[in-house]
View 1: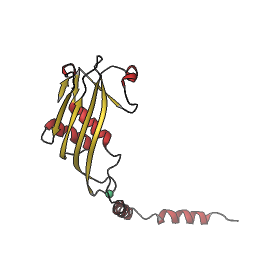
View 2 (view 1 turned 135 degrees about the horizontal axis):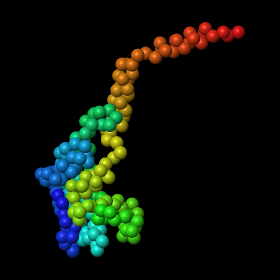
View 3 (view 1 turned 90 degrees about the horizontal axis):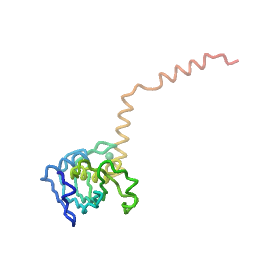
View 4 (view 1 turned 90 degrees about the vertical axis):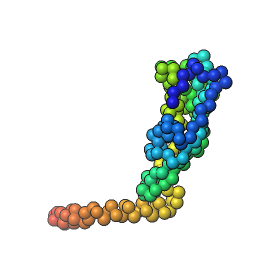
Length: 177
Ligand SMILES: [Zn+2]
């Protein structure tokens, strides 16, 4: 879903979305690495400034079925929160806009051709809220399963004793006096 920035009303605009909206569902699927089973929220756009800067706040509640990055058990991943991004027209260097960025840690994006792609905004805001790793909630159970996986993997490897005994016999054949 694309919006012409110059057509944004003076008091801004809010576009809400839910799971039934294809553009939002597809954008969320990209960021979540899987089709969302629940999705709702809204993208709030400020009126553009003279230089075409738009402050965008995306509020998202999403749920997706994933697997634990450690033990591969099924995990329900939930994202719920709001993220603000400042969008500038493509080609405008961020340094010239330093004074326009109200918060130091505000993420900055660029939009080409005078059009803001809300799908891209949504993917970006979800990606920024994702944990670095998707893991089980129960740490102990996850540790147990992970250890079992490692043990099973070790069992498939050839025993290391062969190589070790060769080294030992080689060492023993060395002149010791
Ligand atoms: Zn796990």
